Length: 399
Ligand code: PLP
Image 1 (spheres, protein in one colour):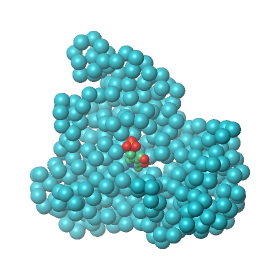
Image 2 (cartoon, rainbow, N blue to C red):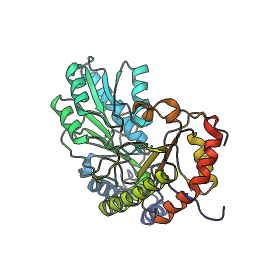
Image 3 (tube, rainbow, N blue to C red):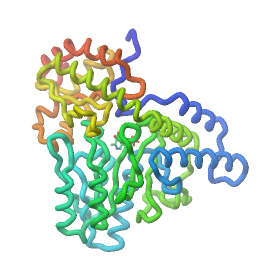
Image 4 (spheres, rainbow, N blue to C red):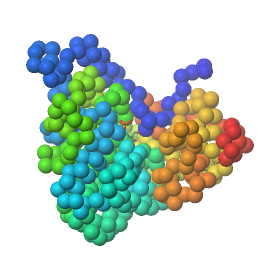
């Protein structure tokens, strides 16, 4: 490969920010267990508490509300399992989990596990063709049997098609029915304004590596009144909600990255939305049959993540496109996980009403801090040949 790949997969993981790298390596070199009482321990504790303040400030939360985890997946598990067990423990009638049908697997699979093993009833909330949950549907489900609802879980923004959900309305609804509301804000942080103190919001999950921090650091924001059972037991760290020695180095990087991402958010969102619009227009010009999935975001009104462009390419297999693009020096994604090497249509696209064949032609291009006009130009330059080859390979996937 003559050049570094053009990285159009920021939604999978964002490049590490230089200041985050410095913070991580400095703390790695210092060491120390933040729970130890001697000087090295207290120094590591100070690093962790600084990170807690930085993450809290980025989310509009109080530092005491920030429960550090190993990432978004763990934060989602703690919220969904923890809220469910607490609510059900207090009243065994509370079995229903109202959950959007476009959640990341970190939430969706956790709900399915609770349904299979702990008597939960999963109520999958439908979405419209753009991937948006209608608050009226949620109101109706809450009103149907309010005493039987354990929790509501709807993500802030979707990782595949970039749809931003009406979170404030949903939180207010949950509040009105006295139901806890968990929101996965892993893709939203640094891209759209995120407010952990939104009235009615109970827990909020975020992840460091999506904002330019290291992999292995995340947080669940949970107010003091959030009733949560711990998932991981042990030394009682993090208000007894998440036992385990804290990774001060990773958390230092997370704090720095979260602070930077939020400080530059407004400016970056405008820049990326313009870049994204150019990418979308270019793809449509080259492949007129390609269909943008998720909201159009014409007015940049915040209905779609600014760095997200997601298409389906009729007659193409998403994996063929991915590997052909990779061969041409472009890193993109089909947008959904592939289970054991078997390409499956995305459950998000199926929930949006697509048929399986159409959904299999998915390709997500996600932009971020390091993205430039030249990246978009590089994609558009290789797309005609890549698309033609993917079409020839067809849905057999033999690119
Ligand atoms: N939730 C969403 C919406 C995501 O996009 C991701 C990562 O792709 C996760 C949760 C999981 O986060 P992590 O990779 O930090 O475990």
